[in-house]
Length: 255
Image (cartoon, rainbow, N blue to C red; front, side, top):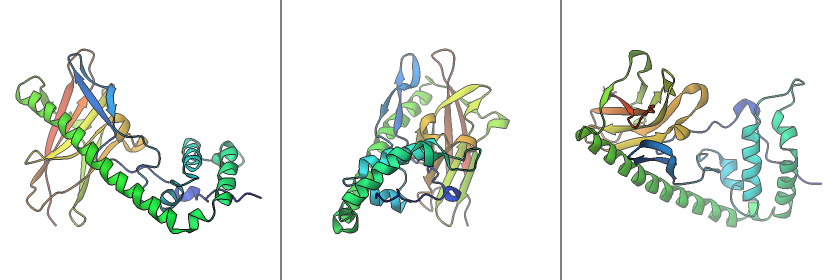
């Protein structure tokens, strides 16, 4: 009989981490800025679950593909039915059985050093992916900042009720910014954060940043003790070729 798929505690369901650099970089055209033609730099299979040991172990190797499909299915069916039964148990049963059979067949792989090597390769690829994303977003931000300096784009302060929430954690040298998904019904396209030396700290499109009820979130590192401020810019859609760029600069608190 096939083993059950890796157990998933509904009380501690995985929540996707806010990105530092999102996977979909908008395209700047004469008609404006869009993610429809954007560069999807990477796929998002088991990507931002680096804090999930189960994902690292089973997300590669001979059962990696079926594991990712099962994991994606459970993400699409959260919660419970009227009888209190977890929805993913019924909706993802077929994938769970296939995964169990695969794990039975390849049990030796997932208890051997071969799997450890797969995890190392996965982590190496993830590191290279971050460098690629940072470079792609750096080009986008440079083009936006040049456009602002040339007055191609104009900026204005965030409306009072839509100012992003900025959170700094001096002890861990990290921060997060939470943006409104829309301003007066106008959806956000992308957002980015730069420091006082114009280094890009974080950037993402709406698809990357969307954390549901939490809003659109970016996380970033506070790069050095000399960093004095962080500037958030958020680009919102418009009916014409123009876009609305809201901006705010906040001082970095020191512990």
